[in-house]
Length: 381
Image (cartoon, rainbow, N blue to C red; front, side, top):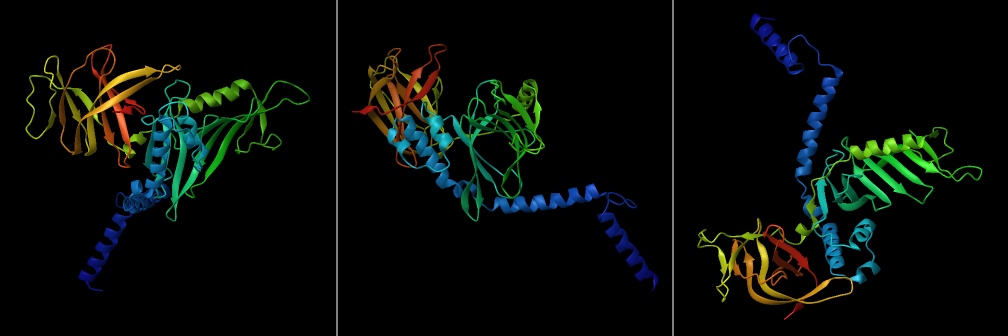
């Protein structure tokens, strides 16, 4: 071997050695090697995930949820006679209130297997469970949407800070459950730790509190041990404190973009490319600015009137179209007059499925700011 060949071989060995460790002469630990391998695999799975349009992959399920929430708010009771597989929690949540801007969705790879899940949830407002209550989680298997979990009020699910899931439920007065589940790469939920109750023995009326660290709800299992009520409650409180609030997109965004309405100062100059509407009654008119980050399929300015009130205190309205703007891409400046406390201005939009959705425009009684809220089934003149 000549000197040049020997030098080249030594240099190659040194370069190879450096590429395997942080510095010459050090061997990477097993942990470091594993971390490097995981990083490479993670990058590969992320690249694969980016190739899938998950909004499109879950479009059918999202559209179904959007239409359920929309119809429920409009008091379409036939909705509850229909078959909606795996959407019990959605139907339950919508039965008594308008959830169009409360139920939201998140598309995210939860178990980091390269496939993003679809989560449907509602952000809780109370202090007891401060996180997002999950109503459904779906994943994709061979291109099909598959249910992973389904939640409702007596079977509530929350995501924890460590990526696991907390389930609290009740199967009756004597059967309470607080459990933590892991979500595996096989897209299966597995109970890892469970605290549960069982009826008292020998006719005792008091509940028994049990813990099974293997995740088995079986009072006769050898791993199940009796605990105090205080220990049971402490575990639940610990889980509640670690619930996370998910960054949800309102399901309303499935059908139409967010539209913001506010005052335009009289001193501001309206750009030439803005759409405009001018009222025939100049005295007392103010300018409202309608904006959206996306194109609006159709927006119609309306006048409105309160027609009556039912025994439950719900107002009924009539609306009359003033002007329609199709494929609205630019902001709209509209002159309107507010006559009193009752709303007399409104607008409607056409969602991507052809539904007409109406909103009242009124002034806040507290600070005079512009407020918008949905109105249902108005009589159209």
